[in-house]
Amino acid sequence: MKYTAPKIVTSPPGPRAQEWIARDTESLSPSLSRTSPLVGVKGEGVFVEDVDGNVFLDFGSGIAVNSLGHRHPEVIAAIKTQLDQLIFLNSMDYYTVPQIEYAEMLFKLTPGSFPKRVFYTNSGSEAIDTSIKMAKWHTRRPYGIAFVNGFHGRTMGAVSFTTTSVSARRGFAPMYPIGQFVPYPYCYRCMFNKEYPSCDMTCMSYLTDVTLKKITPPDEVAFILVEAVQGAGGYIVPPPEFLPRLAEIARLNGMVLIVDEVQTGFGRAGKMWACEHTGVAPDIMAISKAFAHGLPAGAAVARADVMNWDEGAHEGTLNGNPVIMEAAKAVLRVIEKEDLVEKSRVQGDYLKKQMVAMMGRRPLIGDVRGLGLMVGIELVADAKKTPAKEKRNRLIEEAFRRGLLLLGAGECSIRLAPPLVITREQIDTGLSILEDCVKLLR
Image 1 (tube, helix red, strand yellow):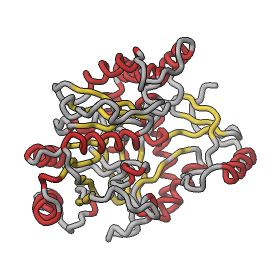
Image 2 (cartoon, helix red, strand yellow; image 1 turned 180 degrees about the vertical axis):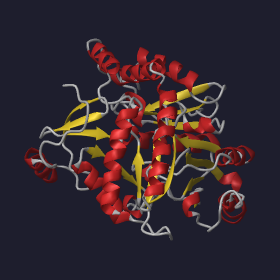
Image 3 (cartoon, one colour; image 1 turned 90 degrees about the vertical axis):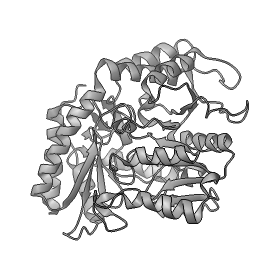
Image 4 (cartoon, one colour; image 1 turned 30 degrees about the vertical axis):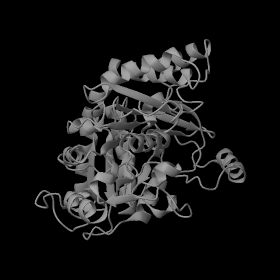
């Protein structure tokens, strides 16, 4: 079936969806936080169909996973071809061709002209854990530094540096025992009540003048872990000088700079990698999400001299599955063939411009920010920027009822991250539904 627009045939969640949700509640972990009562069964391009026949326009891409849209034919074909040849071979003990081929493709596209190596993982959280272990091995130092409001995953290593809320951390102490946290440049809600650029990046001064002078000896810090753009924290875009200054601090003190591009990578932010906006080449870059078109995959890509650990220091049985690697190779080919990085930039500029115009009409929208097709909108209750969390949640609910899938972020923000293949007309359709919902909530 060819989808052309959202279509609601029965008020969602419909009767079949309700049945499945009830069964899910009895069977699956209660730790799963569901945004909307969607029970999807089909996907095509920028649309998802549920078990009741309702069709939704996807403005979340499964948290930036389905960047090529749902079921891109070239990726599906690559998966099917590999399924007829080899599904699995333990890469801890043997070699497979797709792993090597993908690495060589990836190195040409990742920042930095230096020699690189890659370790494949099954998720973004695993990529972060791998990066942390690698940095500690390389430096033989104990401390790690990360940023307030950052999200890096929920495995024990990654969640130790996740600070978007206490819900992911409660009950799991002790975590990484010697991690330090510093402010991220969230300029709309500056922790120091200053204004950019007259603030002269006070948040950076906190790192250099407080953390590294009074709390943590610089020569004992293994790594600085940072998102190029904070994702789950609210699509927070830092000032352009932030990453370069951070990279310089790391370089001067012998620290490993780990840039988390799990959500921002593969063209999402209007360049292949968000850190390319500032010319920074990380020592280690963690990637996942859009990596393999929804198949479980991730990687830590590092300078070859940083990935210098011993044989057996870090392994994984299922990592680099040949089916997943072929899907990943196809993703890179499609991004290049369809010029999706440039489309992300152009369509993202349009989306952001339209949202800024909507903000001028709708005071509920307090801020609009983003890079490429990674646009965040923050909802506020008044001119004092009081977070409108309940209205944010209601907006997501009302949009769902009208056939638009939205995802929350931060305390009161919504992340707009449609597939990179989205058309101008489809953006307009989504924005029309979104503004109708904003009007309803006033």
